Length: 210
Figure (cartoon, rainbow, N blue to C red):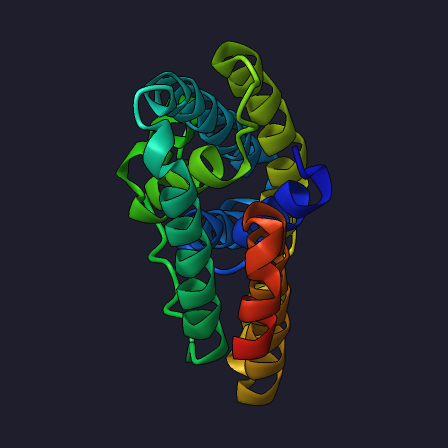
């Protein structure tokens, strides 16, 4: 397993603007960090559980579709490149609407299951990063722990400094620099994974195309 690439991917996906981060930023502004903490922990735990379950399920299925696993992995890397292109071209982020009361732990726990970005993220992790001969149950537990450890501080940053981050992202120049930096990291991760997954005799061809 390429741990560095996995952590990089999780870091980029967790810290970039998205529904979870915007909701937490808005809650942090309106209710403070302490009242936002239950939702924050719920979202972090819910994300870890969802990634773990998807890894176990897709890991079990992977044995039946081993003949197309390389193509699925390449498709996942292609999605990373597409996502990085979208990040680089992203414009201003819409502010999340404030609620009458802060989201609780259970709301945060279930919030990820309604987020399409998280579903794509989980599928991509299971297909691209799951080692071929690793037990899916062990991989699911390991991925869940890593996801929680990486994701928690990233979303806590949004909850703890919601106003500052939203104002910083409101500057077109800073927003573009932030998005381009995240996009470059994500694209680099995709190319790195491609180079490791492709057979050795195909690397010169891919290098020539790049």
